[in-house]
Image (cartoon, helix red, strand yellow):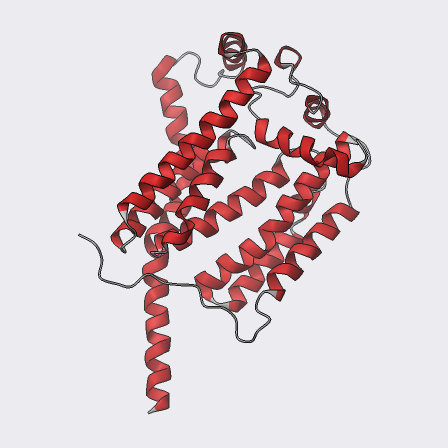
Length: 302
């Protein structure tokens, strides 16, 4: 049965310049990350990412296995002409742009969750955390993953509150996240599923979720097919993947399928509860807070 509460909509800041804060945060994030970018490749994986800009070669770990970083590499190829053909700078620019986008997304998410003060604190943490800053200035995938994760969280929050406008962006972000880092959709899928369930209970039409699923599967098939075509097809990729998996399954090799499944449950169990708690508890708490504030304002007015 659908909930009777009206979908919550983010309220813009007072004044006509409400767009200035997100733009300013993005600009500050981009300039700071780009100004401190690494001049030399400092990690083996980063070097292989740079080499992958000229073509995938999974047998030589270009990029490193499981190798499905097609969206990341494609973004680097698109921006490479803007850096004068410098592959290191191209990937650093991708990271700087995505990490910079995390700042306005984080500001918006924090503001929606607890007001302007929370938004400012979250944006400040995303900006100043040393580890996030470091990886956003490297030709790796972590800075790009940061942008994707925060954007997914922001979209999921709004969908959970009953806003149908962000169903398709949420689906697109989740579908392409695996081409940035393959672990991201695995760990964020529980959050997205629960957010969509809550959104449906708050009046988001089922056909919108159907459209989102279709869009997500279409994007996944598109970049997945392009990736397989570049590496020589599924028949060439699968043996390499199986060999890599065998070398990296020491924790559960003796346990077989059951051991691997238990390892998966433990991994998801360590990361999913906080996200699920936000999706389940956050919107009702925020709605009650907004109702209390409205009642207080109405009382003051009378």
